[in-house]
Length: 366
Image 1 (cartoon, rainbow, N blue to C red):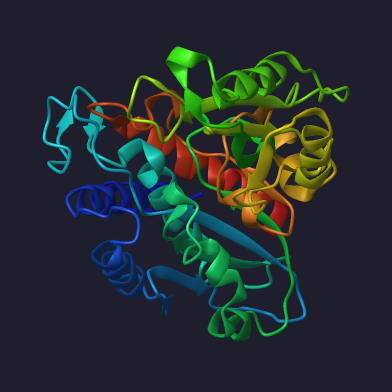
Image 2: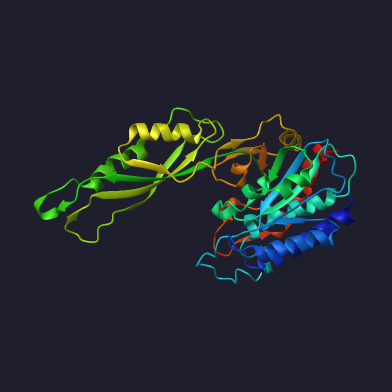
């Protein structure tokens, strides 16, 4: 590993992250950061492509007879927390910390993966092809992000028939390997009663009916407990009626359930169990964000284990859930800082991320 080349990659990656932070990129509004990423790749001799606000490229000596590894992270952000005390777009560095919206989630991961891709871009005779993809709409699980890119005809043509057999998804994990990840299913539930006058104790109170189901969601335990992800978790997070008057017994009570699924159940299996045990009408918003895991035997994981990296099951969901191939979630930064006021990433975390990504892939690619 040539230190001169690595030092330049570090400097370029940090400057790119500062530029990205300074350019607002809320989900569905990432056009300007997509242009920055496209320009950065071009300036480093790469031939990038773009679909919507997703930017990608393949390595110079792409060989369609070999499988491919995808390096992916996102460049959209949430809106700034109202408790910010610093300008979320100033990209200032203080005491070794780079502050700014999206610095930790997931700008540091993205620029580290881009630097890694550039490091290997001109290498010949690799065991795998490399694909870099900076995707949009991750924060809202939008359909015009990585999901749309993986199905896009231009993207598929750029792979020339090569199959993606593994991926590194850049999210802040303190550079630990998240080899499994919970799926997410959001449910809209409606308990139905009968309207009546509260003073005369008329009707059937839909709130009371909802309470019975809510208690079930609170107390029910699924049988299959994952060694990596633990139990399936269910939380009621919203409840409401359409009533505005205090003296009307509500006919309907609606509530929302956040369900985090481990890898031992499909969303369909969980939904079947829920419907068998509740009386409310249950409608799923989506089953796209499925639980996922990558085998210990996968070359990327084996490389990480050889580097003595620790591994765990992640409680949070990422674009990994939208991939139909094995993917490892790993990156610089700390998930606990994500979406927080005065978000930051340590500059050294980015440098460490680049170094570790390169070491991880060297064992796989060469």
